[in-house]
Image (tube, rainbow, N blue to C red; front, side, top):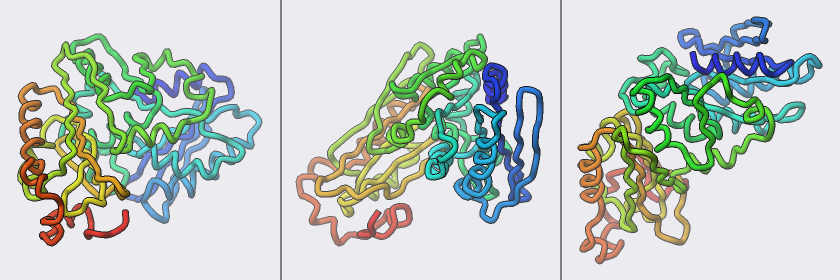
Length: 346
């Protein structure tokens, strides 16, 4: 496993470093905690959870474990390896409040460039890979991996020599932001990148926020493309539902924000990967009208035209827009099942 290779390399390079590793025992609703040094396993224990959630697990077990390890004079650094499907922004957000004898200094996502297209854009689920956090975790592999890629300041994409790896690295280049570092050899990562500073949680949250989504682009030799679709006009609720499969289905990574004219006070998030699309109310828009912007990346040429057409057809037309918002206020709220009741605070 590539993450294990990175951790093993760091354990050998950093004197006094240990790994605090968690794996999920899904059927039992518990975690397995391991503490590992360069010499081998120091401790192994199964941890029963009161609630099967990431933040609960970090608060109930990882915090006391980190406190204990920080108090051991033999230990100079701890490499925290949460379960593979854990969302880093939740892990970090939970741990930040408990920094006392220790602090979070960095974060990395590790992936295989050769399988990046399949992992990020394919329709396989976490359950099919056997790496769900809980039995009710229905996310695709792409959704979970994309969240990790977008949050982490360091992206390690193992570049085995092959055409598949080159194509996968091209996709990663399209998805990573300009402020993220990219390494292509897990054995050559400078330990200072992970252990030499303070983790920029705010920057990670900004990269994940649909209000600040940006088109990063990248090379196209292997057919990767990115569309930056934007409009001051909202989506037409009925036409959005009609075209949502064409807009978000298939081998795509799509992110961004939108709004609908019958709820101008709500910024809605759009998050799509692996053929799945998640939408929901994200934030209140304040005094200004929101904008609609989706950034979509894919690898099948024909999909770009399909997505662009679906985006345009989902928008309120210029003629509808010219009539203003008043005609929409008494219409049926078709998106309530996804955005919540109209008028509710976000």
